[in-house]
Image (cartoon, rainbow, N blue to C red):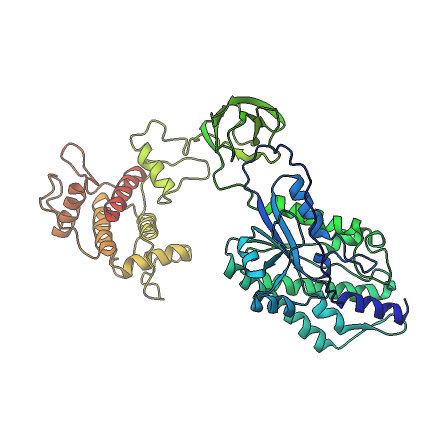
Length: 543
């Protein structure tokens, strides 16, 4: 490339064409529309020459925004489009200035009766907004010598790129201030100089990456979607950029960009209102689909239901539900609903959803099927209070140690230690997490030891657990539970007053009921009894 041709490329890219273009005309005859759940959208395009549609011959024609509007119209989801606020040569400052002035410009698009529109009102009315801006801020800082080698001032170039990011953020703020529900899609730029020598391509590609990264940074914290075009244009750059002296795309190139936007719209745009189609599992093999009616139900005849590509049922309007049977659990299915009017015309955008039926409840522990405490053990496990063993057993009659019981209660109450040193000297063989739990229990007054020993391996007796749970109630609620009557157990009279009141409290709260008038205070607490007492205590604390 010559210096003259490169200069022409740059000039073409930043050229501002003040051309009044008549709106594109909609088709003369309105044909019958397909049934739809989608309210037709208003599409507004903002940006530079790529949004305006400058051709490789530097003329104003169809750009990706026009092709996108046509595609949306063909799918019968477009109410109106306008690219009149997209101008060749526009920089980010120009877009911001248009917002500040609330400019009025000619409408260039389809579906409008007015000839002009104001920017603010257009943004407020738009459902979909595309934005293509930033290249003209950067490329003037990037020139070439006689050999086509890029020349630039690093500081100026970096400052320009940084400004693109900041101004993109400001533009989006303006858009969302006027229309918080607008769905915005921002175009990423491609390499505009495929005819440069191979040794210069890495630098140009790096510039494109830096520019796109700045745009993405400006999108941070918003719901805007970035649309990558660089890879697609790079697949066939000489077809998409046929004029070595011009950086604008051919019709084929603009269509590729349109396809990238359309793909992103299909994946990310909120076409349907929330809960338009829902799926509910009836059992392990059956689901029920429920959907909302199409917008205009006057001519609707039936709704067809599909499982993958196979139609599995059809219901007459106004029925809005259908059961699908003979499904497999833990397998993902793709369901869809299609509306058909009385003339046989089918909806073009069908309701779709993916759904997996969860397998029915499995046996949580293999050794509690007929155990009296099965329900409370499973409840304790689901709450994370207790856990089983690696062989899927719970071992309900196994004794609970003092260390195990303490850890369970501390974790259930989410207690943290108040000190950084271990109080007990007989915990050396235990994990730090267990030491921390025991220290937290000691610091909060739940447990005490003997001469600096906690005796962690000893089974915790039913009386000891009752006392710990009574203290846990006071720690959690900030006040002790004072029972109004003594416990009816005949085998606790030799215990301290605190222990007797603790047992009485558990009895009154229906946490521990004993057996035939006996509490069996000296017996070790089984894992089953501990699960019941701890679950019931946590429920009492939560009330």
